[in-house]
Picture 1 (cartoon, one colour):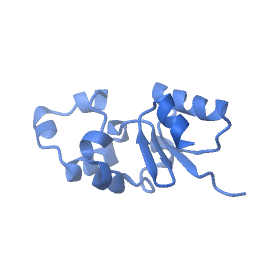
Picture 2 (tube, helix red, strand yellow; picture 1 turned 180 degrees about the vertical axis):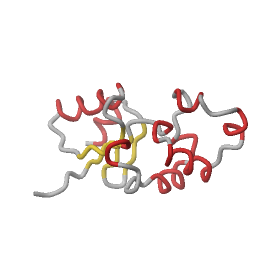
Picture 3 (cartoon, rainbow, N blue to C red; picture 1 turned 90 degrees about the vertical axis):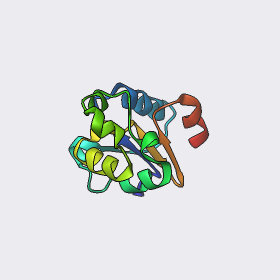
Picture 4 (cartoon, rainbow, N blue to C red; picture 1 turned 180 degrees about the horizontal axis):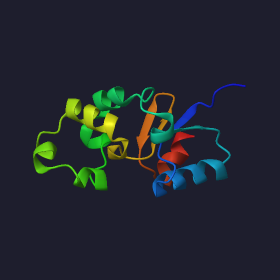
Length: 117
């Protein structure tokens, strides 16, 4: 059996991840789900995402994890800091992250998913 070409990264109890998974299943799109907490961060291409898109695109600045950072951490944020923090606290990453071939999406918008598949 071949590996699905779409990988959905996130946390299974995240409402936005649930919406994305439901959309993929409703549209019979095969995908592999990688749970940051259960499957770990070792194989997550976090550095590549940060290098390509930058921390403002990768981190969820509306999350409770972001709000828990002190002002100094937020003001000094750069890709290296984001890599260290999100590696330890994956709930800082905007979810879901959907990778399909050369395309990467952060968050869930139905129109974007329709174009992706």
